[in-house]
Amino acid sequence: MPGIASAATAVVIGHVAGGTSTIRVGAGGIMLPNHAPLVIAEQFGTLEALYPGRIDLGLGRAPGTDMLTARALRRDLASNADSFPDDVVELMSYFHAAAPDQRVRAVPGTGLEVPIWILGSSLFGARLAAHLGLPYAFASHFAPDQLDQAVEMYRTTFRPSAALGEPYVMLGINVFAADSDREAERLLTSLQQAFIALRRGAPCPLPPPVDSMTGRWSDLEKAQLDHALRCSVIGAPDAVHRGLEAFVARTKPDELMVTAMIFDHAARLRSFEIVSEVARLVAPRA
Image 1 (spheres, rainbow, N blue to C red):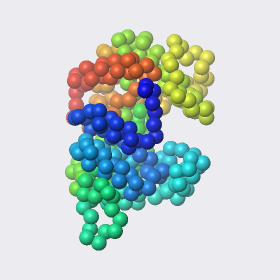
Image 2 (image 1 turned 45 degrees about the vertical axis):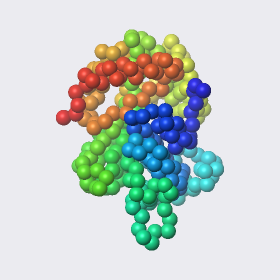
Image 3 (image 1 turned 180 degrees about the vertical axis):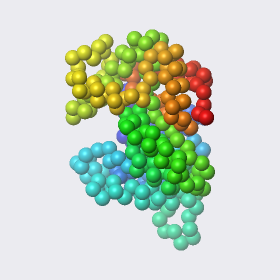
Image 4 (image 1 turned 120 degrees about the horizontal axis):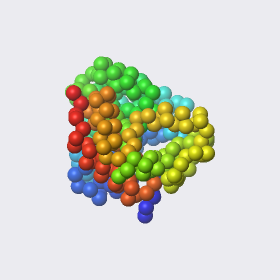
């Protein structure tokens, strides 16, 4: 069934992993304040057991919801958002080999060492990832304000760990690619409309694109959105190539996470095809 969106991350990952054979599949991510670490360890331990070597677990600190939903999840945002570092360490412990007297274990999960990423859009996540020696993914595709400072802090304060010997950074970037600049700009309007609806407190499913955003936002909303989405590349293949190369040259990521909130599935596939084609021409970081 097309158009399915789900908050049951582990279920969707299992579906994708079951329909593929080589790609890694991960969470981008599990907002840990909403979940008990043991439950997540068992879910991702099960996925790792079913699809060994192909599962990644991204963990975020943002609650991602309101107090009413938090109560429905049986979690207390006021206390658990602040305990994120402790929750991460607890979760990591369930993937280590169990001690002989360890009473609480993830089944499965114990000893599987599922790779964990720290997700963030601020200096907090960068500092935690560096301290724990974990890979770091920055949400520059919608919250780029502290991108440079966070990456610099992570790389300069990184402490090698059993999981990772050197810092490893993934950056998010929006790419709306099409066979013409005009069509790519039209595809972008779906994200623009959804973003404005969210900012107005009326979130909605991703709407179809429109020919023009004139009259659909205020000057202030446009300025705010242009600022939030400035880590974006929009256009035909040549423009996408130039945009990606410039972003990589400036930020020097180890890996990019390319996202495209495109309404039409065929157009979304075409966008990713173009990205795949031009990515081969993009110089790696120095």
